[in-house]
Length: 374
Ligand SMILES: *Cc1c(COP(=O)(O)O)cnc(C)c1O
Image (tube, rainbow, N blue to C red; front, side, top):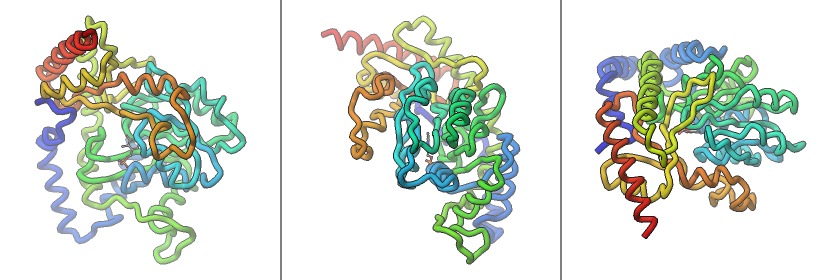
């Protein structure tokens, strides 16, 4: 059995350090918005190259409070993709705004930047590009379109911590960057966690108030906020893990390169493309294969933990039925939804395991082909 991710193996490398820090928090009596939270915010802002970082209790809250801080709400439209995790559009829905979907570029799985402008209306307030699978979007074009049309940019960098576009970390190009520390993310904690990055002092203060019941001063409340704080235990864990993120991301890239090598003669398996000037962090290593569902099933039977991210594009999900969108609206999104398959990928995976994954996938693609013919 080769899992898609093995959190226990990572724990084996940092567990001692983590346990020491967590024990200290438990004994300290300070559990919310304490010294670890503050220190982590400073350390990760420095890591990202962002002026400010504000911790929250999830990536979903980061997206939601980003929209709140920018006063995006009822009657507004927000441009994004349907080829992403639901949290991206959920946040738009939570503030009462409407998602407007742009198709993806099938080479990168990210927003097709050439199709953004056609979707802008007088109601458009913001663009949320998603750096899917750890691959940065084309931020030059996105920030240029946003500037010309006076739109905010909120980057969904939940899958892309440490990824770079032209030497600069994602999450620092737009007005706000959103990150998740869900356990399986490249920088994952042992519970839920999230973060907003921004260079704006105004937005930083807005988010600090929103995460703590809508007021900067305790028991004085200026607006309806939420309770969305990263607790001290999670902050302490993340401070330990942040020291290793560059090394882990580097290993993921090496594993991706090795998979590419193993698949180089397998003409039915399309490996991920990495564009120039991009440092992809391979949150997922996602290939495209024919007869994908059958291949997926065969892999599962053989103990290979492959996954489909995501099986139904968001414009066709029941939650968005009220938008009245039909199949055919986003051809690349719909086609790629039927082809993608993410393979085991984590820093600690071994070359032997990768060889087994590759060999088994190549076999299963052939088997599925035979099956499709009869
Ligand atoms: C994980 C994820 C989120 C949500 O993060 P949570 O911490 O799970 O709330 C949002 N967008 C994308 C693209 C994600 O992968």
